[in-house]
Length: 88
Image (cartoon, rainbow, N blue to C red; front, side, top):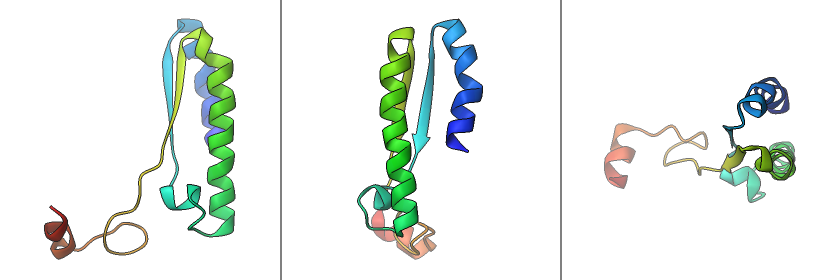
């Protein structure tokens, strides 16, 4: 789905000569701390983003990847109010 979204958005950005694409992948997957399939998918997004940035950067389109770590609580980052208060 990520690559489809990029493909859909790129023509308008290239025509305008500016734009930004931001992909979000879990840091745990990038670090290999997640399921193998998720780690592989995150690595694929990173590689595709690097290649795309080299390709469209000269045309004014910026490509970034953000890899936030999940917060306290469950592995999905859902935290109870007590957890949130403890981290503030």
